[in-house]
Image (cartoon, rainbow, N blue to C red; front, side):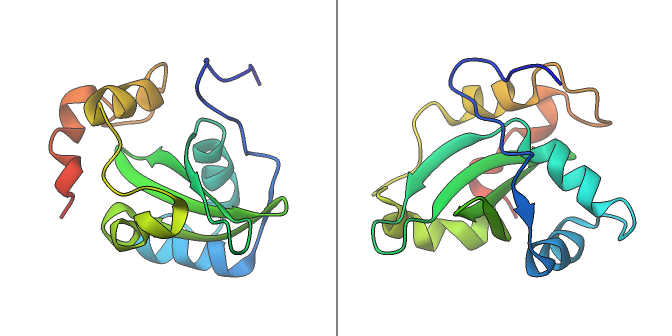
Length: 131
């Protein structure tokens, strides 16, 4: 596996909790047998969103099947996986008062060189208000 591009981080080696895998299957429609591999592939290209100063948890932005995903990591463990709409109310807990700047470019960079079906930049237009 190659290193991620500048500004991105590879968290594919973190321990995946059972809760995180269950939420990934439930929220993103992954097949149970393939879920660990698919989640690790998504976590191999992430953008850090912020850190919760109270417990040290880190929120990272990733893409799965052209959908925005936020993983919550703490001490080399993936605790849970959220959709973007589930994470937005928690932005302030992770040191953000508003949405990240240049949202479209951020998503395109996470999708770059990604051969997953439906991952063209046009498929994620409007994800700032994912429904």
